[in-house]
Image (cartoon, rainbow, N blue to C red; front, side, top):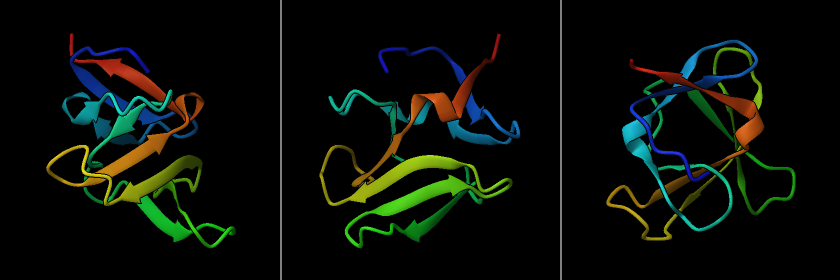
Length: 93
């Protein structure tokens, strides 16, 4: 969660790029948080509990976490709360 380097975050299961490092922010939730995804990379579906929205990799359907809207953390007003085990960091260097 407390890691900020230039690069991208990819799906650990299939390797598809999901998030740009520049879109990561500290939401003080203990999980990596991003305010937007790479266009077309993430699927949103209502969670079985009826109160949250699940996010998954659009390529392989791997579970990533949940997305929350309306918390006012960033200008996009969106927080992708991503399970750190579902992604891997790829450096630009």
